[in-house]
Length: 217
Image 1 (cartoon, rainbow, N blue to C red):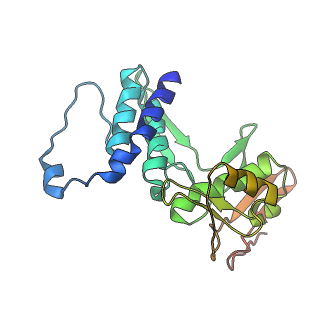
Image 2: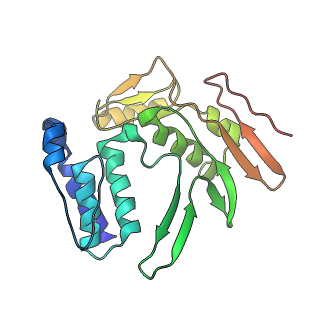
C-alpha cells in the first residue's frame, strides 16, 4: 500500500503536465506497438497505465493494478466514472483458478444491503458516495440520504459546486478560509435512485430532483 500511495502522489503531482500537453494524434497512437513479456496495462490515460504497471513492478498483481488504474483515472478523467457504480469481472489467477466477481452492490454480512446508482458524468462518484456515507456514516434513512443536498468538486474547474444548504455557514466559511471557491449550481447534482435491503424488506428511494418513482410488490 505504501507503494500505491507513492505512485498516486507522483501521478497527482504530474497532472498539470498532462492537462497542459497536447494529445497524441491518431497516427502517432497507431504507430506505437507496445510489447511486454511480463505485464501490460492499457487505459485511456498514460499516467493511469504507468501507475498500474508500477504497482506490478513492485510486486502487485493484476487486481492491484486494475484498482490503481481506476483510482488514477478517477482524478485524470472523472467523467468516465471509474470508481462510481459497479461492475463484474471474470479473472484467471496466477495459479489457474478462475474467479467471478460481482461488485455492483454494497454488502453487509455477506448479503446485499444497498443498491446505489446515478447518472451525471463526473458527478456519479460524488452522488453515489454521498448517499452511501449518509446511510453508513450518518445513519440516515435511505430516502433522506437520497434527498439530502449535495456538493461536487473535481480537478477543473477548481470550484466546489453546491446545491442549496449543502453546507452550514460555519463549514462554508471555514472552507473559504482555506482558499476554496464556491459555485452554487442552478441545476441539481446527480439523480440517485436507490434501494436499501433491510431485514423487513426492500426500501425504495427515488430521487426528488427528477420525476423518479419506486414501485414494488
